[in-house]
Image (tube, rainbow, N blue to C red):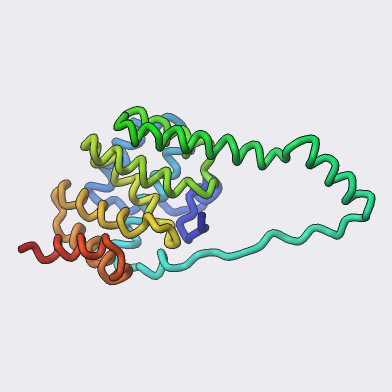
Length: 222
């Protein structure tokens, strides 16, 4: 997954300013705080709300930048060390590989619940995946599908937070539809102007995406 400006990690939370007191956002924060199962999830929610505030102020450039970097190259290994490393890789998988395999299995199990229409079960499964693997490349997809399940369950406030997290990843293919869903949810929650803002972002940033056609129909109902 790409690492955007609103990278959802615990250390970043310690450095953010307090969110402005904005009616419905303050109310949502109180609801979320009451529902949090752990500190990590609460911190991610707060960052998601900050992303929404920036976007609705017209600060779209903030969601168009990503951080790029490569880990430093390790020193060249000696022939003996290289041989030992190769032997070790044959006899035992790397810890990162094991974790990646476990994470993929956890994600697949959560997605399978979506396919079986076990929406409450999928929400719980994706919550567990996100909490345990917050940096995994599939975490954006997990936020998106969690939002879809919550939306179908009419858990609109929770779905809103999930789609905000998904939309904060600029390079994700889920972002256009996540923004579109945010428009629908915002309209359902009674804020027509915010809803139009989301639809306009989809149309302007992703004119070729299927979500743009849906957003256009919301902006120009027949």
